[in-house]
Image (cartoon, rainbow, N blue to C red; front, side, top):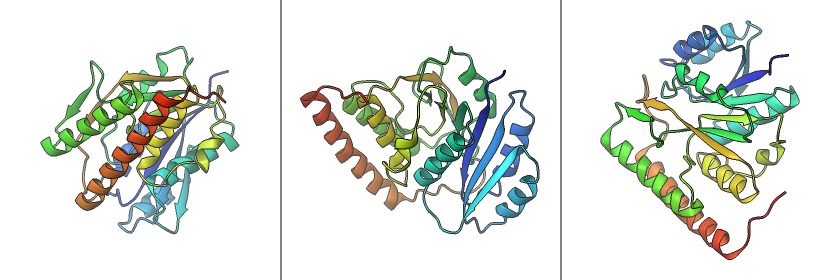
Length: 244
Protein backbone atom coordinates (compact mmCIF):
# COMPACT_ATOMS: atom_id res chain seq x y z
CA UNK A 1 0.00 0.00 0.00
CA UNK A 2 1.41 3.40 -0.99
CA UNK A 3 1.95 5.91 1.83
CA UNK A 4 -0.66 8.64 1.94
CA UNK A 5 0.48 12.23 1.48
CA UNK A 6 -1.22 15.51 2.31
CA UNK A 7 0.19 18.73 0.87
CA UNK A 8 -0.68 21.65 3.12
CA UNK A 9 -0.60 25.26 1.92
CA UNK A 10 -1.40 28.40 3.96
CA UNK A 11 -2.81 31.30 1.94
CA UNK A 12 -3.58 34.97 2.38
CA UNK A 13 -4.40 37.06 -0.70
CA UNK A 14 -2.47 34.96 -3.21
CA UNK A 15 -4.86 35.23 -6.15
CA UNK A 16 -1.98 35.73 -8.57
CA UNK A 17 -0.18 32.57 -7.45
CA UNK A 18 -2.47 30.00 -5.84
CA UNK A 19 -4.37 28.99 -8.99
CA UNK A 20 -1.09 28.30 -10.79
CA UNK A 21 0.21 26.31 -7.83
CA UNK A 22 -2.91 24.20 -7.39
CA UNK A 23 -3.07 23.36 -11.09
CA UNK A 24 0.61 22.41 -11.07
CA UNK A 25 0.10 20.14 -8.06
CA UNK A 26 -2.86 18.45 -9.73
CA UNK A 27 -0.58 17.59 -12.65
CA UNK A 28 2.18 15.97 -10.59
CA UNK A 29 2.72 12.23 -10.72
CA UNK A 30 2.97 11.98 -6.93
CA UNK A 31 -0.31 10.79 -5.46
CA UNK A 32 -1.53 13.28 -2.84
CA UNK A 33 -4.40 15.25 -1.39
CA UNK A 34 -4.30 19.00 -0.77
CA UNK A 35 -5.32 21.11 2.20
CA UNK A 36 -5.54 24.90 1.85
CA UNK A 37 -5.82 26.97 5.03
CA UNK A 38 -6.93 30.45 3.99
CA UNK A 39 -6.78 33.41 6.37
CA UNK A 40 -9.80 35.42 5.19
CA UNK A 41 -8.41 36.41 1.78
CA UNK A 42 -10.09 39.49 0.32
CA UNK A 43 -8.63 39.38 -3.19
CA UNK A 44 -11.02 36.86 -4.70
CA UNK A 45 -8.72 33.87 -4.33
CA UNK A 46 -11.18 32.21 -1.95
CA UNK A 47 -13.73 31.99 -4.76
CA UNK A 48 -11.30 29.94 -6.85
CA UNK A 49 -10.37 27.78 -3.87
CA UNK A 50 -14.00 27.03 -3.09
CA UNK A 51 -14.61 25.96 -6.67
CA UNK A 52 -11.53 23.73 -6.59
CA UNK A 53 -12.57 22.26 -3.23
CA UNK A 54 -15.33 20.45 -5.10
CA UNK A 55 -12.53 18.14 -6.23
CA UNK A 56 -12.06 15.42 -3.61
CA UNK A 57 -8.29 15.95 -3.72
CA UNK A 58 -8.55 19.47 -2.28
CA UNK A 59 -9.96 20.53 1.08
CA UNK A 60 -10.35 24.21 2.01
CA UNK A 61 -10.37 25.53 5.56
CA UNK A 62 -11.44 29.17 5.41
CA UNK A 63 -10.72 31.11 8.60
CA UNK A 64 -12.56 34.28 9.52
CA UNK A 65 -9.50 36.04 10.96
CA UNK A 66 -5.88 36.55 10.00
CA UNK A 67 -4.52 34.03 12.49
CA UNK A 68 -0.93 33.72 11.26
CA UNK A 69 1.18 31.37 9.17
CA UNK A 70 2.35 29.43 12.21
CA UNK A 71 -1.25 28.89 13.27
CA UNK A 72 -2.04 27.62 9.76
CA UNK A 73 0.82 25.12 9.91
CA UNK A 74 -0.37 23.86 13.28
CA UNK A 75 -3.88 23.41 11.91
CA UNK A 76 -2.50 21.48 8.93
CA UNK A 77 -0.57 19.18 11.27
CA UNK A 78 -3.69 18.62 13.36
CA UNK A 79 -5.81 17.87 10.28
CA UNK A 80 -3.23 15.49 8.79
CA UNK A 81 -2.97 13.49 12.01
CA UNK A 82 -6.73 13.29 12.55
CA UNK A 83 -7.17 12.08 8.96
CA UNK A 84 -4.33 9.58 9.52
CA UNK A 85 -2.07 10.59 6.65
CA UNK A 86 1.42 9.07 6.61
CA UNK A 87 3.14 12.30 5.56
CA UNK A 88 2.44 16.02 5.55
CA UNK A 89 4.32 18.26 3.14
CA UNK A 90 3.99 22.00 3.81
CA UNK A 91 4.84 24.63 1.23
CA UNK A 92 4.20 28.32 0.53
CA UNK A 93 1.52 29.61 -1.82
CA UNK A 94 3.54 32.52 -3.23
CA UNK A 95 5.45 30.56 -5.88
CA UNK A 96 8.78 30.45 -4.04
CA UNK A 97 8.60 26.70 -3.41
CA UNK A 98 8.87 24.79 -6.67
CA UNK A 99 6.55 21.89 -7.40
CA UNK A 100 9.38 20.15 -9.25
CA UNK A 101 11.34 19.93 -5.99
CA UNK A 102 8.66 17.85 -4.26
CA UNK A 103 9.97 14.59 -5.70
CA UNK A 104 13.28 15.19 -3.88
CA UNK A 105 11.52 14.72 -0.56
CA UNK A 106 10.67 11.15 -1.49
CA UNK A 107 14.10 9.92 -2.49
CA UNK A 108 15.15 9.01 1.07
CA UNK A 109 14.48 5.97 3.27
CA UNK A 110 12.09 7.92 5.54
CA UNK A 111 14.14 7.48 8.71
CA UNK A 112 13.68 11.17 9.51
CA UNK A 113 11.05 12.80 11.68
CA UNK A 114 11.20 16.09 9.77
CA UNK A 115 12.77 16.60 6.35
CA UNK A 116 13.49 20.26 5.57
CA UNK A 117 13.98 21.78 2.14
CA UNK A 118 17.12 23.85 2.71
CA UNK A 119 18.16 26.97 0.84
CA UNK A 120 21.74 26.75 2.07
CA UNK A 121 23.04 23.28 1.18
CA UNK A 122 25.28 22.51 -1.75
CA UNK A 123 23.00 22.33 -4.77
CA UNK A 124 20.47 24.81 -3.38
CA UNK A 125 19.82 28.12 -5.07
CA UNK A 126 18.04 31.42 -4.49
CA UNK A 127 16.67 32.46 -7.88
CA UNK A 128 15.98 36.13 -8.55
CA UNK A 129 15.90 37.17 -4.90
CA UNK A 130 16.41 40.82 -4.00
CA UNK A 131 19.90 41.27 -2.54
CA UNK A 132 18.56 42.70 0.74
CA UNK A 133 16.17 39.80 1.24
CA UNK A 134 18.91 37.32 0.42
CA UNK A 135 21.24 39.02 2.92
CA UNK A 136 18.69 39.04 5.75
CA UNK A 137 17.85 35.38 5.09
CA UNK A 138 21.52 34.43 5.27
CA UNK A 139 21.97 36.41 8.49
CA UNK A 140 19.02 34.55 10.02
CA UNK A 141 20.61 31.26 8.94
CA UNK A 142 23.90 32.31 10.56
CA UNK A 143 22.13 33.16 13.84
CA UNK A 144 20.29 29.84 13.81
CA UNK A 145 23.57 28.03 13.19
CA UNK A 146 25.10 29.57 16.31
CA UNK A 147 22.00 28.70 18.34
CA UNK A 148 21.74 25.07 17.26
CA UNK A 149 25.37 24.23 16.49
CA UNK A 150 24.05 22.75 13.23
CA UNK A 151 23.58 24.03 9.68
CA UNK A 152 19.81 23.58 9.61
CA UNK A 153 17.54 25.89 7.62
CA UNK A 154 15.38 26.61 10.68
CA UNK A 155 13.13 29.18 8.99
CA UNK A 156 12.17 27.11 5.95
CA UNK A 157 8.48 26.29 5.62
CA UNK A 158 9.12 23.68 2.93
CA UNK A 159 8.97 20.60 5.19
CA UNK A 160 7.93 16.97 5.17
CA UNK A 161 6.61 15.57 8.45
CA UNK A 162 6.83 11.80 8.94
CA UNK A 163 3.52 11.16 10.67
CA UNK A 164 4.10 7.41 10.62
CA UNK A 165 7.12 7.85 12.88
CA UNK A 166 6.12 10.71 15.19
CA UNK A 167 3.08 12.24 16.84
CA UNK A 168 3.35 15.99 16.25
CA UNK A 169 0.39 16.92 18.45
CA UNK A 170 2.76 18.71 20.82
CA UNK A 171 3.44 21.27 18.06
CA UNK A 172 -0.17 22.40 17.95
CA UNK A 173 -0.32 24.31 21.22
CA UNK A 174 3.34 24.93 21.88
CA UNK A 175 4.73 27.47 19.41
CA UNK A 176 3.98 30.96 18.10
CA UNK A 177 1.20 31.55 15.57
CA UNK A 178 3.38 33.71 13.31
CA UNK A 179 6.66 33.12 11.45
CA UNK A 180 8.43 32.24 14.68
CA UNK A 181 6.73 28.85 14.49
CA UNK A 182 9.38 27.60 12.06
CA UNK A 183 12.51 28.16 14.09
CA UNK A 184 10.80 27.55 17.44
CA UNK A 185 9.55 24.14 16.34
CA UNK A 186 12.98 23.32 14.91
CA UNK A 187 14.78 24.32 18.10
CA UNK A 188 12.40 22.24 20.20
CA UNK A 189 12.72 19.25 17.88
CA UNK A 190 16.51 19.36 18.07
CA UNK A 191 16.47 19.54 21.85
CA UNK A 192 14.03 16.65 22.14
CA UNK A 193 15.92 14.28 19.90
CA UNK A 194 13.83 14.43 16.75
CA UNK A 195 15.74 13.34 13.68
CA UNK A 196 15.93 16.26 11.26
CA UNK A 197 17.34 15.81 7.78
CA UNK A 198 17.65 18.24 4.88
CA UNK A 199 17.63 18.27 1.12
CA UNK A 200 18.74 21.14 -1.15
CA UNK A 201 15.94 23.06 -2.88
CA UNK A 202 15.89 26.07 -5.19
CA UNK A 203 13.68 28.99 -4.24
CA UNK A 204 12.43 31.56 -6.70
CA UNK A 205 11.50 35.11 -5.83
CA UNK A 206 7.79 35.17 -5.04
CA UNK A 207 5.40 35.32 -7.99
CA UNK A 208 2.76 38.04 -8.09
CA UNK A 209 1.80 40.22 -5.13
CA UNK A 210 3.77 41.48 -2.15
CA UNK A 211 5.22 39.73 0.86
CA UNK A 212 3.01 39.68 3.96
CA UNK A 213 6.05 40.57 6.06
CA UNK A 214 6.51 44.35 6.10
CA UNK A 215 9.82 46.03 6.89
CA UNK A 216 8.77 46.98 10.42
CA UNK A 217 7.51 43.51 11.24
CA UNK A 218 10.59 41.98 9.62
CA UNK A 219 12.91 43.89 11.96
CA UNK A 220 10.73 43.00 14.95
CA UNK A 221 10.82 39.33 13.99
CA UNK A 222 14.60 39.47 13.50
CA UNK A 223 15.05 40.90 16.98
CA UNK A 224 12.79 38.27 18.52
CA UNK A 225 14.62 35.50 16.70
CA UNK A 226 17.96 36.81 17.95
CA UNK A 227 16.68 36.77 21.55
CA UNK A 228 15.13 33.30 21.16
CA UNK A 229 18.32 32.01 19.55
CA UNK A 230 20.44 33.32 22.41
CA UNK A 231 18.17 31.66 24.97
CA UNK A 232 18.27 28.36 23.07
CA UNK A 233 22.07 28.56 22.80
CA UNK A 234 22.36 29.09 26.57
CA UNK A 235 20.09 26.10 27.24
CA UNK A 236 22.00 23.95 24.79
CA UNK A 237 25.40 24.53 26.38
CA UNK A 238 24.22 24.52 30.01
CA UNK A 239 21.96 21.45 30.10
CA UNK A 240 22.06 18.09 28.30
CA UNK A 241 19.58 17.35 25.58
CA UNK A 242 16.22 16.17 26.89
CA UNK A 243 14.45 13.35 25.09
CA UNK A 244 10.73 12.64 25.18
